[in-house]
Image (cartoon, rainbow over the protein chains, first blue to last red):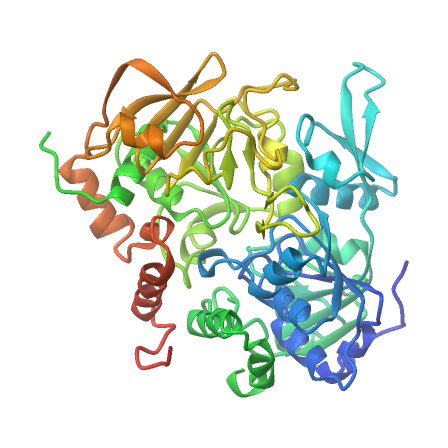
Length: 270
Length: 279
């Protein structure tokens, strides 16, 4: 780690910000489920002549923004506890790739992600937890080991620390120094900003200076890009709701084997 | 009280509400509107002091708003008393605060172990990869207030042995808490007796024989098995007119084109889908 640059002005165009993501990176996408996801960033990434490949996608929950990257062939591994579109059903390209065996899936749960992040934040290799004991999660994750509580003798799960090369977080408002304000639907964004080597903020609105109610201090941030309606068709509460019609269009085109056609029309519909 | 004409989604929501005690801390998982409808119904009737901890907004909510899809945050963020990050909710609260939660299994065995990982034992080429386990292997191993719901009861879901165990039931490896104590499906209500799933009530129109035929293992039958008490007229009115006028809860009991048409209808009502739009 970290991060950086001497900086008064971190504002760069979105088309430059996407170049931070390199082939092989662990890429974390902020927001949660269908809420405040960095969709404009993903769309811009897919506009590159040669988008990065072999990404490990790290999300608390993965949705539409992540499914686009899987469909475009940018992702080789996923680390998340839920990959789906809530009321809109299965994430079509993830489900297809996962069922065909073309994607490496590192199964996470809420606890393995939360305690893995806590371990990284604490600067230690693992965090103990009572989660998973007795379940088949250890068969899916042979890398996760048990540890004996030195005080009680109880067998516990030792969740390994998580790392992240680039985190992309969509903000309601940010200033040129990277100070960013989110809404109250935080997901894991404040912690992601602390564990990621590089942090990119996209924001609905850019101002010269933001000094109160900041969720992510500029000290954590690598670059800021202006992206109005940058979460759509996921929501950006309270500015706009979920673009349900667009998500239906996506799901139905994927069901008809038309992901590539959908991808070609991403820009017109944005 | 007089009973009213009702639909199966309404009966399930009412049965969920009946499991809520006043003062409960209720956890609401991802994409579970039937559970949300039941919780709010309980809060609007016999459990005004219930609190919701929600996966949307990671907040604690005591107020309510009508259910929505595009506008779900109006409730879980707009009405939240407090919000935190998901890391904090999972690491600081769920392990030690007793919460009641309804999970929806992809498969379930007679002991109440359940699977939300994949259908098929070959993980590289499963028949179907499910969206993920969310908090199930975390909460199910220590909870003593775990409930389950199955909106479409079938032998594909009720199986002798789960392909993968992500939710811990009445299992010898359990160190804390207890297995699920209640399950509601679209056919009946169940509990666990000596660690085996047991039918306690059949819904109007569902016979014990039909429920057994749609279950992939032999069911225990409670000695006092009876017909599920119907919703009251006021419960049905609250669900239809106040808690969920768009019928979001019904998405969980529908499938295929009926579900798709209903989803489109909801999105049009919410103003995020142009009624003239294709498909």
